[in-house]
Image (cartoon, rainbow, N blue to C red; front, side, top):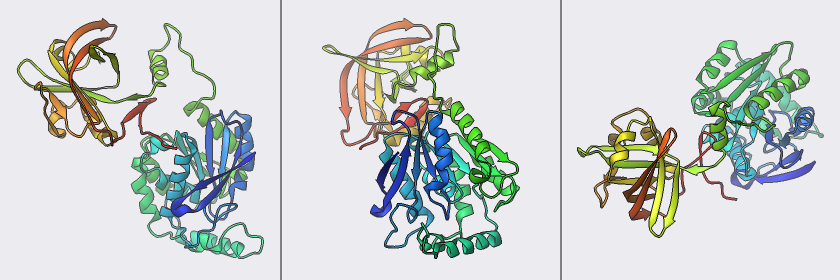
Length: 406
């Protein structure tokens, strides 16, 4: 066991306990109101036994983390803390968060979820709290916080505004672009089934489990059941064992294996014989030679623009930057009117060049090679431009990513 420290929002020092081997897949555990990281002790032990690394985080004002001088315990401050921790971890953990921590995780991951977390588990999260039940619980937590041996700042409960939380959650739900497990206890809940149903229905990729015969906190009341559900979810979504492809196996397995190689994202553009601009998204792009200056892109035979790209004399490869994810989606889709949806201009050779790209390479066709269900288009670079101050749009394991700077 080691103690790790992170710098949260406005410089607040956050503390976490880390269990397990550094090379094992990470799981970040976030506690609820009136708790500390100690609530996860038994769960963390099960995770480590299953070959996972458990990171038990204390929220600001709780356990070993700093009590902020300004007394800020609102949802935005907590969310900014969690985003800061995820950025400093240097990897994408599965985030497991309970009650208040689940609210925090939902808000923290409503932007760039897939770039910060591998998956999300929301435990006993009220989607819309019953005001009377919430007030009774809040009063009890405030009473406990005043005791001499309390492990959390009394302001952490008193200063957390409940107004508007439900609306924030419903707004965040469609933006949580990671696989999400929504898990609740079976008896004492602070919300209604229909409110939970409404939240889960908005999640892009969700699983839901209700654990019967559990009280308000399924982690403590049905720990064994919770561990079994969590570990099964992790094995499905982030397997511990290596996945293997053999010739003749499912091609999807090979595709997933190839997806372990992180790439940039490009859009290949050209004009047809009658002058119509065409283009498609491609991440199979490689520098071939500096003398002569050659590059290549691999184009799927089934792509709508494939036949036209086989025949062009000139083309451009536009390397996309982090702000051009919508451009990548546009040129990867079936929409035939792609160029009306993004800014572009004619390059020196007359081919379309996308405005604002990280770099662009105008090429004359050198050779074309058949390669299974793709063909390789090799071009000789006649003109290249690039913008050194932008960051690249990356693609890894089927999702867009961004650079992480330590």
